[in-house]
Image (cartoon, rainbow, N blue to C red; front, side, top):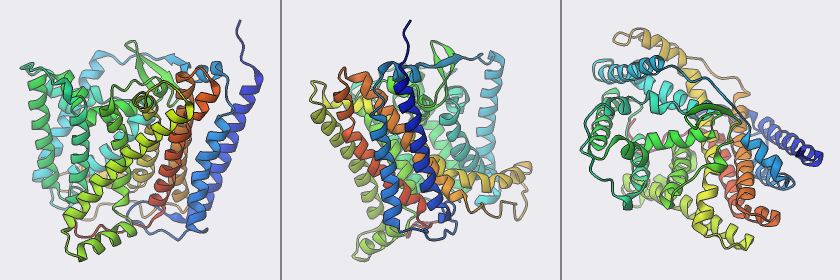
Length: 464
């Protein structure tokens, strides 16, 4: 009978205790940073540079502590733990799909026919509060239900297919472009305030999705092209509930990430882009971003060009930084494994970072606007003139947001650690292979904390 030695268990408890203690200290120190975008935040009680260095230090120290967990059986036991769950019945799945398609139709209809004011139109609230803020979080907090609840897939599956072969050379690059395009539209247009525009975008997305699914087949379209399906599929690997051999399985959060197989640079680029767009959405609403855009626009560069250049340049910078980190890991580990292979293996470890930032950036909006959604949803065509919403969030909520960011990064460190021990037979190689990706995580941590702690500033030159 194989037993796990007591020392790794003790070290594991020490890692968890010290990491949580560090995260708690940062959360308390930053508890006065306030709420989400649009909310007034008090200045930090400590110097910003100290706050950011401490946050980055949490990730660095967590890596050092995790390095002491060298028992492969313990690492494997953590990620292999699971329990099978009963599957929902076929009738329930059918009802869920009908409900999802109905909700999409109602959202589009009310977007065109309801009030023109964003906060009084249920279409805006359903998309940005219920779906983007709430449902997206459910895909990484609970499990990926999008294959069942996607109204686009539900409509596409019964349609006949032309079965044109999907070009292998394209891989998943169309989904990378699609994700960049969707977030770009959200950033530079009043999509969150204009129900008519939002309904038009929903119709356009539906038409493009159905046309693509009919042309190349449902599976090829949603596996390679559709950015929403691919994002939720990856987020679902982080969730505690997943599908294993056709059965629902309960597992530890992030337990499936070390085994997540990415096919090539296109998949890696999608993961990095998912992290980037989540970050960029908050970055454009900070004071330094607004000042920089105004400064460049003042010398004659069109504002839209400034935003587009920063957007594409930032996406490229994130990807190149991760590629450089993979090269550092390969060089430090002195391995025959290629940089591409290491990039594919370690990229899933970035998903907890994206999830933590998404939760930090959107939870406050969901809580504040949930009463608004309930009131407007009760009478979508004749909503109250001034729908109710929470007056504000408690002073400690800013610390909770920052804790979400840090917890996402701490989980990312552990996933990278488990991945390294799955890749390398040598413990020293496994530790050294993480140097590059850990450095990138420290940088991402400091950037994310800075964005969350910055007061909201409306992006200049963008219609709202």
